[in-house]
Amino acid sequence: MPTMRWYHALAYFFGGAFLVNAFPHFLAGIMGSPFQSPFASPPGEGLSSSTINVLWGAFNFVIAYLLLLRVGKLDVRQTKMVLPLAAGALLMAISLARAFGRFHGGLM
Image 1 (cartoon, helix red, strand yellow):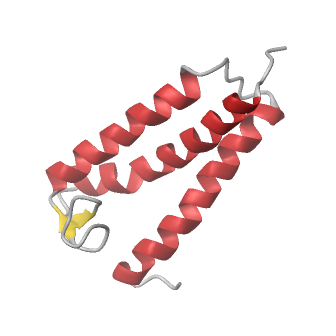
Image 2: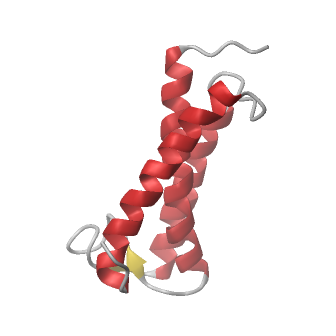
């Protein structure tokens, strides 16, 4: 059974967060839709082009890959390894739902 050090759990937590953050940007970008990004004016509120969102989503996928698959030996069959990943993903998903919901008609 692979061992998990504390910094592996931290990497998996943030890997889950980056993975979830990649999806709305990447999908909006490949659909050709402008979407909020950190590069808009004002950051996180204004709209960025679809190209910027594809690039931002791809960057988030790369960071997620590095944190999830290059740190330690992630085994998705090990609950103790999946829990930090799931916690980071869920926290980011809720945060994004609240943040983007303000602009796209979702409830806060």
